[in-house]
Image (tube, rainbow over all chains, first blue to last red; front, side, top):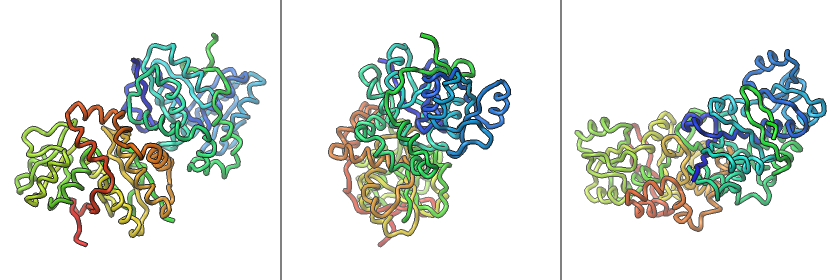
Length: 236
Length: 236
């Protein structure tokens, strides 16, 4: 049976060989949730970049600048890191260049894998169906928070494993822990998450609506993929 | 209120400043369980060392050689990594030099903290009482498995946090996850652990009795501490 493993932070990804793997990158609060929500609503592509300077450079090609540092919109950028802003950009079929504290770093560190896809609670069942059809082992790469473990990305891992546990062997303790935690709290994920450090941090920034939205499962059925340097939704 | 955080592996410990902290090092399977069991039964001191060569050097001073690599006793060593062997050595009040795959590395990486203590399921309540009396923030440093997350050390973290949650603020998501998982499985920890990769690996080596023993809570009421280069139980 194919194997699925969970890496809790980009600081540990060097322990997981990515050759021949599908890597699912997740940053529930909020980078990959924004990508999924935007692309599902008309955004044409998202260019994830590690630095603010790189974002300004790409903006010259007509990209909308999006992103945050420490949860706050980068000064001068057109939008921040709210999924509602990204959905709004879909109306004009914008192309977005995005840089965030954790999520774009996780994508960057995954980029040498042959297949990188974008996961969020918002599309978790679509990701599960995609992986079932694909004949590869899987690494779930959690963006975490500044190198540390984060609850929301682990909950995504648990939600995905719950959907895949009949099709894959869970190949590591991190996966078993994520699945156990997800099943313990899945009936009230938002209530549980209110206790987390990251939600308390973001709550102070007035983005509690974003958080509640990003924790919803299965709003969209798309699976964005990294193609060269851009995240797009391939035509079916 | 004082703060308590959990670091899931020695690969992440550089993210946690240890100055002015008490560090609780845990390697449930089996390094710190051996230390607690041995020291509670007459072992005089344990010298943790990172390499087999260093262990041979210290053995010349009359220390019993103990330890494993990849779960198997080091060739030529007097004992391996079973708590029963370590308890047996207590009868002669032996001094032990110990090297293991994960546990001694975690001690090594914690050693610059002002206070390092040794935790295991076997002494988890004693550790909790010790920390309550001590006026410092706490880091629980899990040894993990070759840099990765391990279930058993996280369960220890959860068991300790359950005992301390009225006295400390849980300062990170890793702690909230450990506490949630512990409470979800605490009625049958051994049954739950049988699904883990590490237990399956060790089970093949015929050490299932060790595992069952190491998962028992509160067999001993001692708290070993690192004093210079040796782990000892200070006189009360």
